[in-house]
Image 1: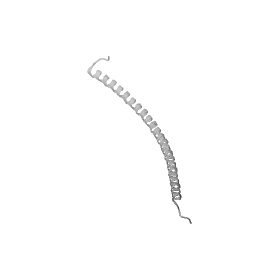
Image 2: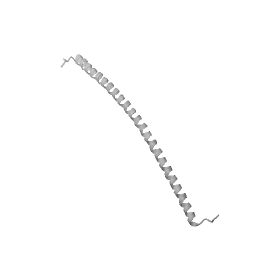
Image 3: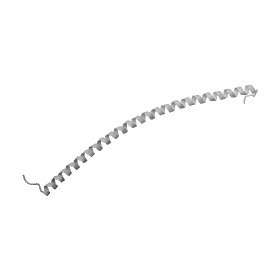
Image 4: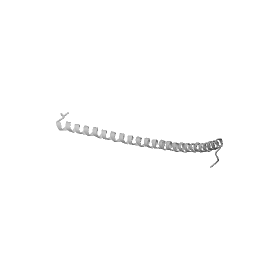
Length: 95
């Protein structure tokens, strides 16, 4: 067996460094792809849920507008009836 000299040691150090750097690069690339795909899936799921929530809010808005219109109509009728009773009690004639 021959003794190991300086050029062989530096060659082994270089090969080891290249293998380690390549492995880290590969691992980082694969990890970034996985994270990007996961974030994309999460983004799609959140958009779907927000769209559903937006639809429910629009339905609620329509229902509340209908109820407010009904209350407004009842108040208008009540105002008309109170005005008629007031005229009758005070003996005023209709305008």
